[in-house]
Length: 439
Image 1 (cartoon, one colour):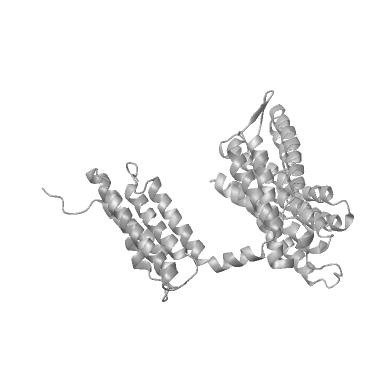
Image 2 (cartoon, rainbow, N blue to C red; image 1 turned 120 degrees about the horizontal axis):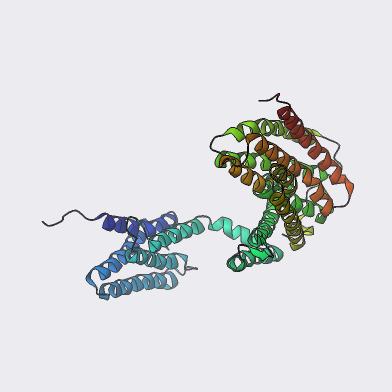
């Protein structure tokens, strides 16, 4: 019996073949004038032409249909270029270029061969990704043009350097390096350097855009990624900007600690589905949030801030390699000490490792502790003690990172005061747990 209804594969190809072009045409549609001829329908049908030609060529085993469609596409694009040059005397060929791209995307959809059980294959996903990317670039072209106009040479060079470090070195760094009997996490060290350089660059851009307020955004969002890296970077920024705004920098450190504690809570929710650990961790989270908000409000209302001036981004580099390498070296040393203690001791070793590991990354320690608890290798008491201790150390270690980057005491005193208050709350909570007053 003849099958009259089209297959799901054909329906998807036909629909997607039109959409990848129509999405680009959607942006061009809003700018149609006497100098532009193509919109949603033209772009969509152009990409659909490529899809049908490529798919038909595969079905019948003859590429002549595809060559015919390519010729038609070339004629259409050439006609648009001719019209733009000699009729409207316009400048730029963006519409003509993306019109040609829409045909290529349609061909990719037609040539796509998804694996069994899948709707889209690699070529289909590629076509959708490029279509969306072109749409975003066209839609925000005014914003992108403005950003390019105001970007400096140093900022451009820093962005390229960061891209090179990520794109070219990432595949070359081994997961681990064997040092005797120790598996040294070389890729994790590299990843920390990348994080620090990235948050430093983001810090620079946020401060440049939002001035004084930008340092707050960086403190919190940098703390979500790595609070130690964020504090190290923001302190270097403070030193490079002639030590202006110590109060605002100290608030940025508080926000980094706050983000770190909140992130640790999410880790516990994800890794411990019994929710016993997060239930015991909620009280310190809430307490730290309240104290941090009070501290921020008091700092913002303070009128005795003669040195709180706008940060001058002209005095600093978008990011510094020295801070990144220094942080990576500290991580490597502490990691080796933590590994040694964990192998020698049992529960006590876990607590000691938590204390030492908190100086580098509380998130890594909490993730491992939560996993060990969930698999039954740690009791709830040991797990909670380790979590509170590593969080406390991660709060206190901000004093060390600030001191390493800036030997003057002005910022250090403010950071030390805030860190000791938060650490005191955590230790007091741990004492209440140990005495059985908070069961």
